[in-house]
Image (cartoon, rainbow, N blue to C red; front, side, top):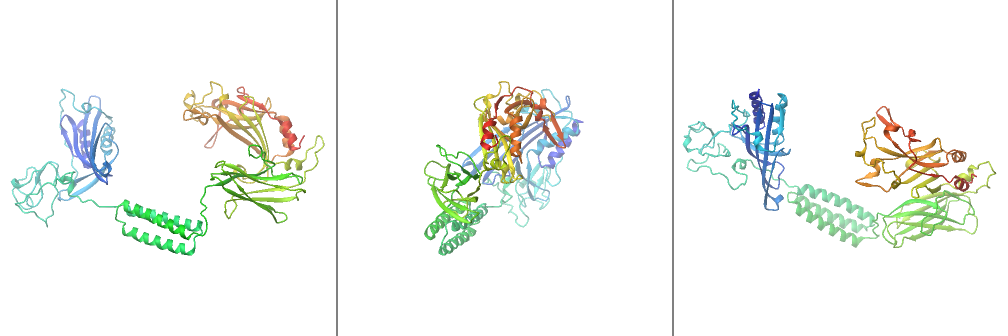
Length: 629
């Protein structure tokens, strides 16, 4: 069995072009050299050593590997360096040169990882175990061990025998070990040059004089073995330079448009760019440095041309307007007091506000007010952001000593001199009916104050609950609910309120759920009574709270109901007076599988544990604000 295994290993290694030896203290030994196949800017020689011992006592094949690397060239800063590795071989591409029976040199590449793979696959094929060892002695014969046989490795058909008799000094033909005369020219073997490394074969049409024996090419640091195969010279500068000029051309067009350049600026810039591009193509076989220098010079020249022929001003800025809306007033901290969609005709002022983000100091924002129903331009105002920072609120307000005309209005907002609005807000002015009688509701008064928001503190003093009402504009999370009234509950939970035994880290879980995953404790937010919950939303799993060793100070979630009415708000207030943050474990609530989807039954969390925190919803204040008392 062992002889068959070693013969099979030898055949596979020979097929890879690996010269193997038998003996030398092991069943198979390898000592050979390669070049790093990916080393394009210098020379990196890799010496590879391995030994294999098949122990028939325990049916285990032990293998030891060692690679030693010596390189020089640009990657070593013009100097040289070396390194070695023993144990498991890295999977890396190397290249070597072999000579066939026809005397021709063949360059081939292989993956060093294929060597141990061939040994391992053979072991597995015969039912033996395979082990890689770091100590070479473990892959050698133990003391007193006498091998019963010495298997020979098969050589690939396309390669000449490794035991070479040298090369003929007259025609360069490789000689067999026992040859006395050259098979090609008949010259006696005594004139052959004996070399430890294979010499390059010289073609017949260029024979060397008999009196001038071939000399090893010691100028190449890799040795004569590799000198026979010419290397192709490639330059990456042309490709990188072309990519750089394509990007420069795109940038040039953008800058010409943004700067509103005069026609002469277009002509001069394009001519300059074309000339530089022509030079770049002429230098395509040169190195990257020349292309980079040409790119920089062209960029500076184009910038100078743009400066000379510019008729407008550059407006490159990352400034943006976010969260634009209407409000009733700005508070003392310069923030909007609320969000509204409509005003009463007797409102003291109309206020449009937005967040100006990523803007430099003194950025100008233009507000354009329009009365859409009457197709009237009301007023334009230009506001300055001042020097208070990159992210600030900007606003504009209108006042009127007479009632506002009922109808639809619009405010367009522009940053600097941009031609299209960066944000826009639509609102309306509508008459609000009188307060409804007791026990009745008024949808008109209810809708007139939307959007509406009310926040309240939960009993841990830090977590915040929020009740929101607004009309969906058909975008974002509620894009399928355009013009529907959305009732939303939101909680911002302080994680310091979690009990001490709460499993915040996944590795602390002691059981798995039905999916086979750690059964982590979780949280849900619920709007509930003492016996049931109206609204439940998963707040977090443990891994969402525990982030890179740190516990997030707050986690947030929200849940909403669409198409709710004034009557529905009153019904909620009667039945569900409080908000709770509940704790549960996945194993406690169970998992449900529908098709390929697993769902946590969070509705079963209600009542499993005492609430982590809770608070009463201020329904009296909410209903009063909404005109639904």
